[in-house]
Amino acid sequence: MRIPYIAGRWVRGRDHYGRQRLITHLLRVEDPAIWVVGTRRMGKTSLLRQLELETDRPESELVPLFWDLQGVESFDDLSYELFLALEDVEERFAGLGVDVSSLQNKDAVAILRRVNRALMEYGKRLFVLIDEAEVLINIGQQEPKWLARLRKIFQNGEQRTVITSTKLLSKLNEVNMDWSTSPFLFGFSLANLWRLDPNASLALIAQQQSECPVEVDSRILDDILVHTNRHPYLMQYLCQRLFVAEGVEAGCLRPPEEYDLNPDHLLAGFFQTDFQHLTTLERRILLTISNLTVATDEEVISELNDQPPDRIRMFMYALDKLGYLRKPYGQWAVGNEFMRRWMQDNYQQLTNKLDSMLDESNIESLIKVGRENELQYLHTEIARLQHSLHHLRGQRATANNQGDMELAREIQRLDEELRIARHELNNIPQRAPAALASSNGYHHTESAEILRGPKYYGE
Image (cartoon, rainbow, N blue to C red; front, side, top):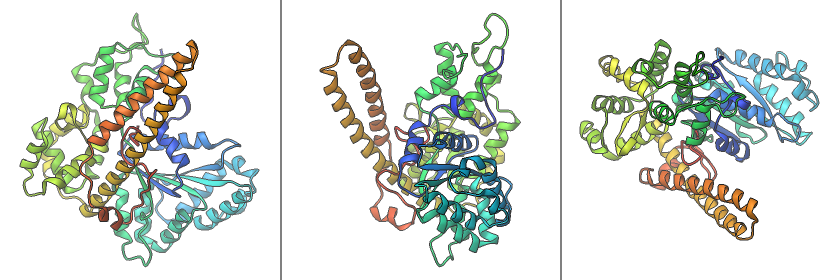
């Protein structure tokens, strides 16, 4: 029997689970440019491909264009990859006044302007989906003028842009701080991509969207969720190991054994990269918690007594949002079982690599704006859920038997979302002074999404 789990390549359509609330936000938000941040193998490419799928239809105002920057080393490379991206979906643009062949040998700024003008004539907007955006750092160092012109295109409001990367992209603002205009990322709305929500995680493990769902014992299901912390790649990685392809139990998942939870060389490489994308303080926090196995806020603060407690709490909050940490039963632990074992095996080596190339103050500003965005979103979302529940309960009073059952299920679903939203709101660190959020240049609005929340903004 074929193993149904897909680990190691992007997915969309029936193979794509969760993220729907994040996708809905990205399609509706008015912000012209959004930066989605996530660790390796968190599903950034799959998110963009799903956005492409959901907007590639005649009635959509947005016309998607997936633009992969992997391997790009110069602005000429970037322009050529943009042309190839258009050439790959030439039929999508052919009926909208875009002659793709005429764009060959044009620079990326000229291409985007030409396409934007053509689509506007048809009442459409270009929806640019940029993957592997870290390469912009090198371009910003070598060809800053071109990067400034590209930023102007992203920010002018004619098109919609979503870029995905690790938080290493924050170095862009260090590269171009001497611009006469704002640095590249100023004005981008922020969203962090993290774990799937519980229902999507259960659906993924049981492959509920496939033609051949997988039978999973409830205890095995709980073990998978605990060990992976609902990380989409790790769930599929572990399920591949546990899937029984032959025999009487073919099509089921067996219980995980100790050896199933040991990271292989591929996972170790991902964890090493993720560790390199941390600031010095973040590395210290993660290593402290790894050494203690589980730790309270007070224990971590005591171990790192050269740092202000509020600053430590803020960075732990951010590490939780990106999946480096989790907080089961009120105590901190490393984000998932695979990473915990990798850190234990490499603890001494990692303690010798505390120095980071990331600017800690820049990352701290990013975290504070993210926290403000999440607070705003959660207050708005809680009000929306309360209004919806009030409306549905009114409908239920006059519904027939069949309608009453459907309304009851929807009310139960919204009640659960409201519970999660309130729980997330209670777990956000104390709000910083308003000046902090407005002084660093990152954009946030009432509808902006960041990190988790009931939408998880990475659900």
